Length: 86
Image (cartoon, rainbow, N blue to C red; front, side):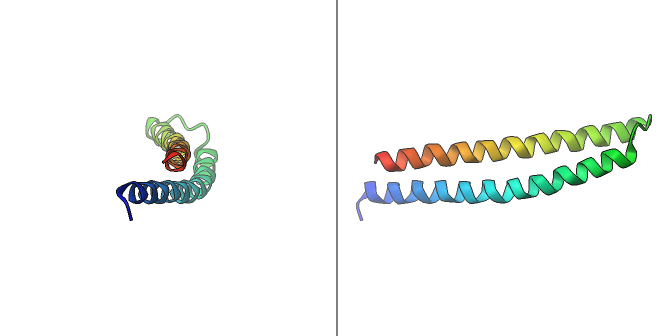
């Protein structure tokens, strides 16, 4: 196998792995989002700073999971285009 063929195979494999990971992370993100919503509803309008901080931290983490999914899917698309062009 030539180096070019090896590179194509490696990049295609990386794209597939990024896509699988994005799918798994998206599924986790959905479950996490539901749990954050439950905690937020339970704590409600608590005036305690620690409660508000916890909810804000969980919501920030939820957004980061969503961003990670988007980044992995973008990486998979770009890697697939690259591999196809080799």
